[in-house]
Length: 83
Image (tube, rainbow, N blue to C red):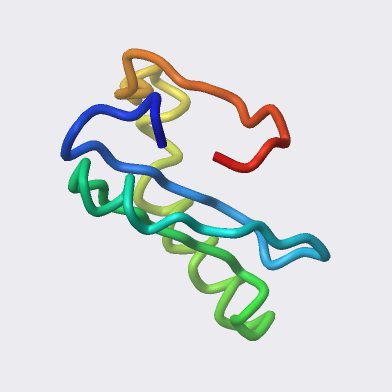
């Protein structure tokens, strides 16, 4: 939380595994951070396949042509410690 810019975004893909961490709401609120989480674990296998198929239809040609770029300027990996 200390590393993210004011009004920044945190996107958590995956998760819902066997570990949990405490969440301090104060830095989140003070920095106006938007936190987005996504996982396929809560979806049926049919829904996950449909999402993957639609994503492939929408993105595969652009991916193969090299037209997709990662928009982040920097990224930070978790040290495993709670923020």
